[in-house]
Image (tube, helix red, strand yellow):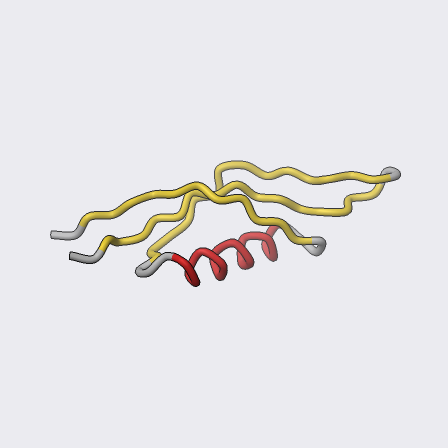
Length: 67
């Protein structure tokens, strides 16, 4: 039997939402072992002078705890 845990993180990218998700999953995988999935909870953009400067996502990352 496995036990999973969920943690919420925020990731950002100047390129796109997809890039922000990739950055977040890659970073989470450096700290958390056995990452099995991510649920995108929220999207947000930062705007400066009428232009999007940053794409942000809040995601819930699931990982399996070791025995």
